[in-house]
Image 1 (cartoon, rainbow, N blue to C red):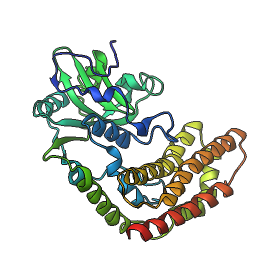
Image 2 (cartoon, one colour; image 1 turned 30 degrees about the vertical axis):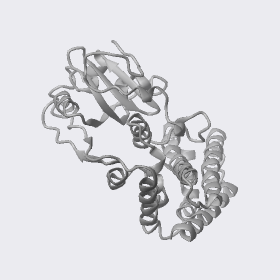
Image 3 (cartoon, rainbow, N blue to C red; image 1 turned 135 degrees about the vertical axis):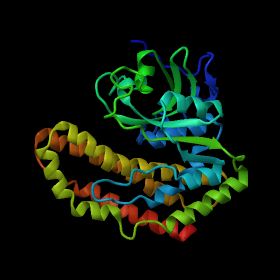
Length: 335
């Protein structure tokens, strides 16, 4: 088995390696409350950063996050916003041949392939799933060398590569994967830059316009309030289920809620940096939601470890209040 991780060393593969990705964006810095958010947001933050674009400009959509009953919205950059701000078109990739053939075809055209893969073959997940568990995630491939059996990709907090057996696993070329009729084609997209990105005041104006658009899409009621209505039942399930369920639950509830509002906090400060009058009190409320969500996650971990229910009333009070204040402040400033 061969595997490696890189920040972009040379080679003869198709595509372009971008040196900017040697240093992750500040959104993934050590001061982040939620250093990892979800695979799609983390990927796009670093991909935009690698293209020399500002990921924070596109985070206005975070105001539309809702409580979906069994999770908080898995927040991600809307395709419309990516095209409006950055001139990037994202389309579904038709996968009917080998994955290797399709990825190669798109990279040859200068596009980036976004592919759902199995973390079992991703060297950068060595601390979690690599060679341990089969976990779905999305990577963005911008370079591939079929002869050397090596692929370069964005994932999580940086830019990496995989080769040898890992490459064959990701491309589904291993004997147990190739031609297996019981394995469906993966979901894949490709990102192509169709026009120059907006800059300076045009970027700020467009981002503010998107905030107004997404505010009109905001939940009708406070999503934290609706979460707490069923929180007791959720706590019962956490105490009754195995540890793996706890990790899945906390990823889809406190992490998605907290990380989403940490991104809103960063959008507001980006706007302020560009001279726009910004409700920084809302930025503080958004940051409180991020920090309080982490406190709630710690309390859930302690409750599960002790097998003793904790309804986290103080955390939920703070989260619900800050959400109300944040939405009111945004409506006053942008509504």
